[in-house]
Length: 238
Image (cartoon, rainbow, N blue to C red; front, side, top):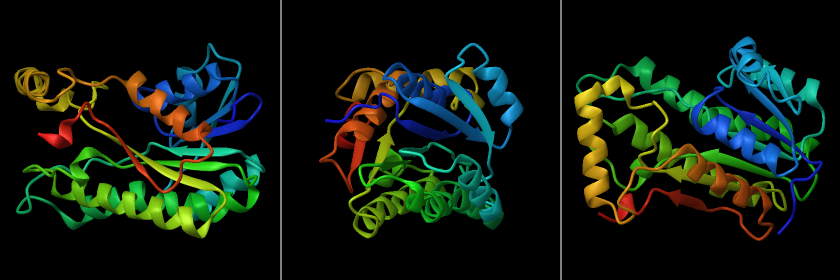
């Protein structure tokens, strides 16, 4: 297993939740961390207390933006993409634009990252993408999310072959308490969490730190590539 000490890790995503936990975990492991997202000012504020984390701007749905970030950063050792766009709803309610936004952010975006960053990475570098448990266990109202997550898993496998020996893996979280479910409202969120606590083998909802630990493992295990790591407490088994 390698170390992240003095390696440069790029984390794409917001300044909260899983992206933040990942950036802090990589920093704690000794990495020089660059965080990037659409709102670099918000990222600056989110990481203002950590001088080892630098904020940049990028829009994964815009190839010129991805290429510009690659040009500004030059060499990086690892790239983690946590970015997503919500596309919840049943098939009768989904608008094509919402589905495309989900794919462009979470599936096409990582392809663009690979296109513009792989040539700047060392052979022992890696990409970590984010899919999700719905790829294996779809539920009503999560059609577009499940389809996008399934695409990410396929992209990780394909890129791991094409970019070898650069490694490419995916992290597939289950229900994680990041604030993403707040939109359900207090009662529905509580009911969902109770259902997970009751039925999943781990008997609890996940945390951002659970996922961040898996990301660091994927970044540092040099014999791991082309896989999707389920960090879901066994959610897909029930």
